[in-house]
Amino acid sequence: MTLRSSAANARLIYTGVALASGGIAFYVPLLLSAVGLAHSGAWAAAILFGTNLGRLAGSHVASRRGALAQRRGVIVGTIVVEGLALFSMAFLAAPWMLVAVATVAGLGSGLSFPGMKNALLRLDGLAPSRAFAGLSMSLRMGMAGGYLAGALVGGNHLVAVFSVLLAMFLAYAGCMRVVLRDIESAPAVAPLASAAGIAPAPAPAPAELAWLMAANVAFWFLTIQPTVTMSLYVPRYVPTLPVSTTYWVTTVTVLLLQLRVTAMARGTAGHLRFLFVGIWCMLAAFCAMALAGGHVGPVLAAAVLLALSQVFYGPSFDVLVSSGARARGLDTGEALARQHFWQNLGMMTGSLAAGALFDLGVRWAWPAFGWLVLAAGALAMLAGLGLATRRAGATTQAA
Image 1 (cartoon, rainbow, N blue to C red):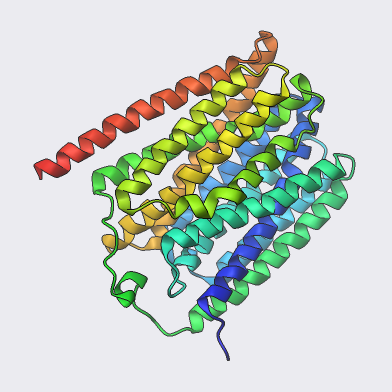
Image 2: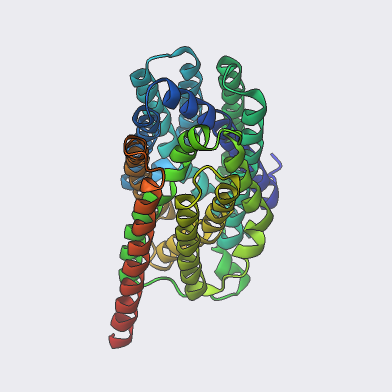
């Protein structure tokens, strides 16, 4: 059997990821907006809460059993489970049913996503920073198409939307099956840095890794909230703006900048600086939304700033975690699953808080309320990270 090159297999993974993320982006704004208008912001947020609860459980299992992040049957099978669970949403009306099915879909995602990331790291000759930047690009490319399709289709054709989504997930599962079969058939190779004769960048110290995981919870707690709140805020306060607009503006910005920006980071210090830049961009986005009122301009500016936050933060964080695991001889599948666990914990609690904050802002006739709370959280995160970085640096110098 002729094996595909690492570049070809990476493209297959990126294609599958783009299809799956496109399917999710296709339905999320439409469904959240429909549920929010028909029931409440809290019920809309509960759907994302259920999704991330399932992801939390799945990634927890994967982090304890590293072999699950490498088994072809588990990865492919859980992708199919996620697609089937999402497809069933087209036939459900009660919000609690949607939450239950979203939890099952999240479980599939939590088990398969770390395995997909680990498969990228197992491709010979693919640098981690480039691999994760490409992954972020494929995620956003899929999202751009999904959000644009959602804006064109509208919320009156959900059966068709979820049927297309199922087809996308089945194609994703097929791509991963092909890639994992090649990886299992390929001869063992030395890690990229050793094979190339290049010394790897210094890995984060154990203390730095600990506060990195804590920072990841806080970052995703904050950054998931616009995903929920924009679907509720825009129809109520900026009705002239299509509900999917902010999503595709964010996505297109990432597509234009991701690979170019990530390549600028050099070593651990460079990626750490990118984390701080990402949080500053997120803070600026929350401030813009607090001042937006019913004006379109600040809302679009916030969408761009949220994109920049993800451009700087996401790939750099993955690089720091994977390099730390490799430097200490840890299983990268387990390490990435553990990172995914903390990410999902932040997203789960953040999505639920988003609905509650929005409902409070509506009740108090204070649209800026939730955004001001988030801005305060971002400021606290910057202060905490700055303090932790200084302490970690002092500990390393003392040692």
